[in-house]
Image (tube, rainbow, N blue to C red; front, side, top):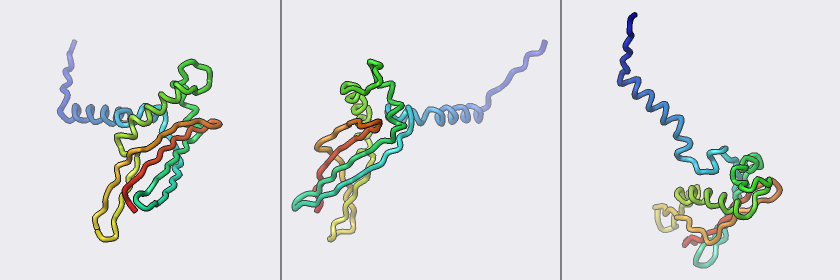
Length: 146
């Protein structure tokens, strides 16, 4: 009987760790909602300039396929996303997007300057609602730009 001894090289260990990182990275950096499926979202933005501020209204419309996969949030299994369940979805979404400035980059360059100013989004109001198999997320914010 012969016993073969396999030596794991440093390169093999390195490759194994890279493979594990590649597999699990999507789950590490995605929000709780996006682990189910990557959503297709249409964004509508309305910008209103006033004398001292600029108001932004943003509406995200999620594709019906994405909301059909939200069954994990249907705690009472009645086939309907009720208000407490909708609140859970909104919390999961906001916990993620707050970290990344609501997945937006808003910059402003004044006329008398060549340096851009990045705007941090601090919503005045947020709302998540469902309407006929679609999910919508709305938020609005003000920026001190005119």
